Image (cartoon, rainbow, N blue to C red; front, side, top):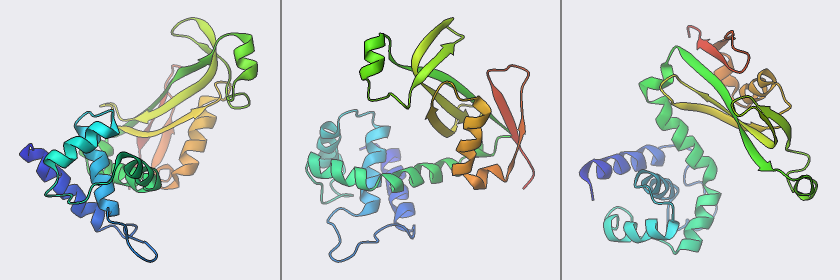
Length: 206
């Protein structure tokens, strides 16, 4: 295995293992610890594996000294779903450690996520009640679906994201996103750019 990847995964394992939220199991602990699940998920992403089966085969060949027990694909998928909050926490923890997180400007923009075109599809879709009709200025056409909102730094570091009905105002969605992350809202002041389709805010002094 690549030495740099080995060092990265080892450091990640130690960092996750030290978190108080890990390994809070009642009774007999699982053979695959929480930190090991997150380490496997990060390794899969860094190595570009879109298949969990291929990722596990690689891990058995190259990560056996680090992860002596590896479950089958179904067991790994179930553990990964269970540990999703911890995976998200690990991603945020790694991002906060980067200098990009402290950029003076954060930017929000959105893009349409089309979910259907024909009227019968719209009526039968399970997205009814969530999706709606919106206008895509980039392609000068209307669409039915959702709108993906992304908050990131100018360098492209993602901070927050959400999907919402395209009829909702961008500022309303942004307010809801910050309600889920109140610790971010207390450190920011909003500055709206002249362009009506995008906005940005700058970090205030701590």
